Length: 109
Image (cartoon, rainbow, N blue to C red; front, side):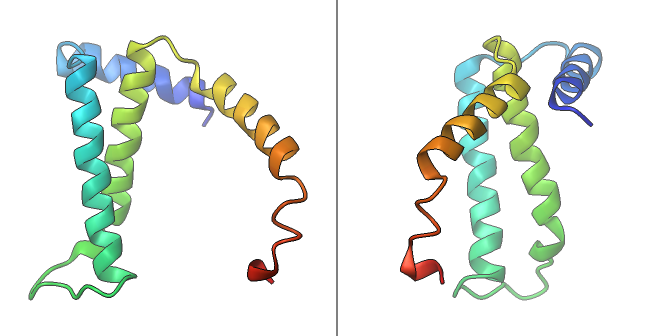
């Protein structure tokens, strides 16, 4: 699915089920909250923190990453950002900036 279509899908969901977008400040705080939930899961499953007893956090990583994506798309929609266009511009910029940098990094070999 193209990013433009995902942005439309989120917008339609907001209009039909969410009534309206939360304001930009609220969505920014929600984005931070969701990123924190992703971080907690990764710290316990891939880092040095241990899982709490009877915790199934590993199963929730995809759900939490989707929450991050949903709120990020809400913010893009609210601020008039075409994420697909912006993403392609960013990849082009990164290719120019980083095209050889990582190949020369001894730590990555």
